[in-house]
Length: 175
Length: 307
Image 1 (cartoon, each protein chain N blue to C red):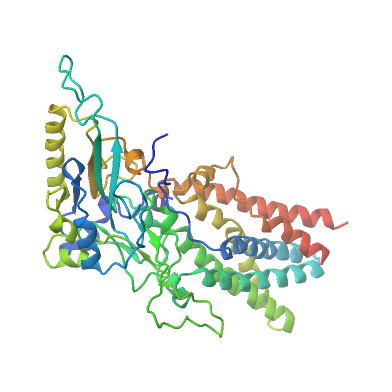
Image 2 (cartoon, chains in turn cyan, yellow):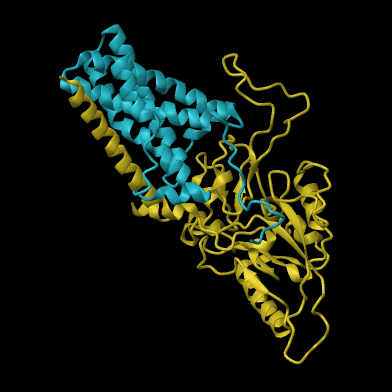
């Protein structure tokens, strides 16, 4: 084993505990939005309503966690300067913006009982962006030089399923 | 998918994007066989670029007290003491070098990759490709997301964790002290973009007294490196090799490449660096399958619960 005084070649990621927490809340938000729409279509209004609220709450907490982790939080809007397909974080920021906007809109309209067509549209958008929101962070972490993250990129490894997703279903059903 | 498959910053992406403003691709050739470990490059870099102090410590690791590249170290001279001869023993030579000590010194720097992972993953567009083909962080745009730090296969980039100004109040948003007092942005070698703009060579190359650090058009440097390698090989230098010269390697060749006298690992360099975004389509495919599984799970949970 040859190395330079035993030092690692790579730098340790600088992400704070906010990021793993966001992995949970982002997965919760995405899966809840999907579950809400599925329940709505299936006629289970109670489940649809609860998972909509859970999803919207998680969608509001998520960006707060992400902004808090930035080295320059006051510059968080720079995430929306560009849309870069080579950067999963850029793609993910836009997904979160769309999903968060849609699910919180739907939740407010659900609570106030106004503008039903707009609410249904917002629910549809939230559900469609829910899938990408649940899984894009897997692409984000595997798109690094960290071997154990990068090597888990094949479908076989399937590390993409977020810890938040199964618990979204559980919390919606038992709430 | 083809747009994703092609990492940005490929040779085709510049100078095309610069049009008439495109310049010849510039870079470094660091010939470690003539490095004397004076650290003039480290000092010149710090002075010109106003890089802050990086900790005054005695590591006990030969003459190296900066240890590694980082936010506050853009040139790093590595020192390696070896019980190995400087020249390979030749059959019947018997020149008595068998128990010799050699002291390897190498000035490390950002590689300015042809396919730069840091640039690809940067979500703000702060990292960009200059008209000289170099990779630079725009400090007025970087928001300190830290994605480039684990993306770099060489561990070059890092976040700066020191106060912006000694009397700087922490940033406040809605009364929450979300901001840390630190600078919080990432920093790395710019290949002295400002000096290049003014027609000067980078500070480290200017200060190098032995021309171990050579600056120039990359094509020219590659030719010069090939000649230097054949000379050293003809003289039986132990372990002489070029590192990062090959345009077909995992990062498409370095803009700043090296002549080393041992395996890259010995200098703390990865033997086979790969730009992580090369595999991005595969990652998105896997994620898409996972997203499908989430939908199937939601439907299944609902169907199962509707009794």
